[in-house]
Image (tube, rainbow, N blue to C red; front, side):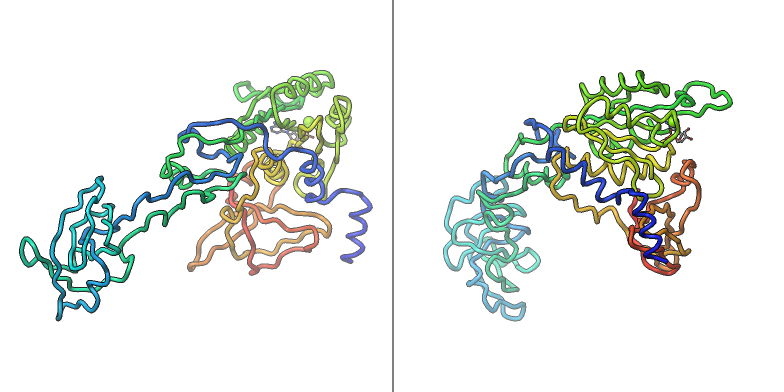
Length: 418
Ligand code: AMP
Ligand code: MG
């Protein structure tokens, strides 16, 4: 039965989502143009070149504790029962160079972060010394070479690659750049994305709804999804199912956007003319119309002169699933991201109910998560893709790949959190 269903599916000639996505990705650039930005503006941006450290971090060997800088050899064998005596040479001040050399048999008091003087290679913590008088301390515990210190260049070495091109900057990355004195870097500019909402029945959020009409949900969910990636949404408004109106909206969007998203108008109904309009405007035009996926089957994917243009099936849940499956990777490529460690956004949970899936179709199942007896459980939320509340109740999505016929209750699944 599996094979028969599979062939039937292939006969319908819908592409697998991964192949469909690849068609678009192969035609668009890695990263848009770049710009030089102040470090404070760089959070969430993507590096457009490798970043090499101009200096050592730290620039000098520093103590990680409050204590006494010593030559570790001088502390060899020190114990509480048989302490070793050292002469107090000096006091090292925070923020100043230790401009003297520590000789054998000497120690110098040092604060956390203070510079080790030449001749010292370790620090004995305050807890492990005893002051005998103004000039002498007892060492109650030996230290190994480099104990309680960060060596010059131990964090980052001068000339070392700190970050690779195509890296999405997190706060710790920006902190590291500040630490080596880099105040401006080259990053890809933000990606601009037009949202065109279509449908004779769609009315704005501030309009009363007459029978037959429905408020525009998709512009709002898409705006949030786009913002979350760090890109810029451009809401072009709501357009009637009119060839010329929609064509004009797309032409205008091509002027100032990197990606164009059209909500609605993708099914085969006579009002759904998006594919024709895309082909009419430019080349290569529509690359696929319909993929083996649920929800989101009638999605349209196209490219017009290197700009991706997608027709998203209007059902609110389908829009979100299509965004995450298709639009997000497209945005990430244009943002210049080379490798996104997606695993951070996934959790593993045990499925509480079996889910069936047709062969040859990729199913995106909405689930909610709960913790019981220290275990994470995922419960499928069944409901039509026209119901936005199925996603409001959901914590994430379980994807059943094309070649899997369903998942049994009790099995472990990966949940993409959103
Ligand atoms: P379509 O893709 O145009 O065939 O639309 C599929 C379904 O999604 C229809 O029930 C539409 O009314 C609905 N829909 C289309 N656009 C939106 C929107 N912006 N907000 C909410 N529902 C929509
Ligand atoms: Mg429509």
